[in-house]
Image 1 (cartoon, rainbow, N blue to C red):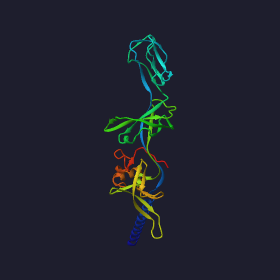
Image 2: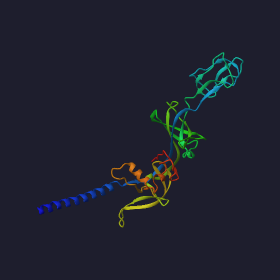
Image 3: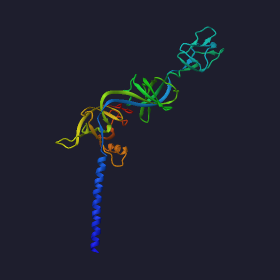
Image 4: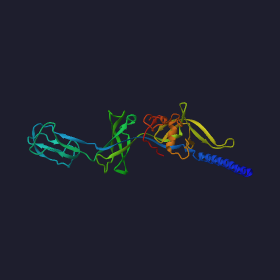
Length: 326
């Protein structure tokens, strides 16, 4: 009986040791498989700021009488009729100067008729130009200093998801609107070719604020930070005297968008840099949690440009809503 007990115990011990060895080996292989890397790229890096808004007409205004107590002789335009700037709209029986269209567009309303009298300042018609359109988008106050007239804008319209529209910034509001402690400013974008667009449609605008050709860049999470210095972990190739390993290189950064950051010093094109490891079975949220706990950037998300509202300028010129072009 004792012999059988010893045999059973031996089998259990051997099985347990074997299981531990196999589990350790599997864990090591899994951890090794989770090593993430990226290659230092060279190409065009663009920084964009995004905002949402609606399509509006450039011209939409009331037409008012400058004549007081004069009788209308003839109304020369009807609602729905297109007019040119300077076209006569209303004439008077006493020969006074007629009321003319202040801009090209469609007469949307006419509120007087022949034989009626008008007073100074009275609205007699309304003109709207539905062929000359713009969009007014709301931009966060932290991004407003980077918005300038003439900047190129890419537009997406919810009603036409497969079409791309372009435009240029034509105005930046001098006053913002505050809500829940955050201010936004209206930025007006003139739409180049507003084919099929209608007033009131929703838009998403990406304003190009910075662009650089032949920039060296890596993913944002390839940059680590410690002791007020930024660095990357470069995988070094094996040589006769040295096996493959890693090397920490101090770098300087430049432009940054929500995906990539420019490296101005410390790395070269083609370098393989390590990214933070992900735990087995984890998702991107695990990486975010680690960053928030102080890993990677030595301060979490607050060190990353374009990833939160409080630090849009990480790396010098970080923005939100950006994409890099390769």
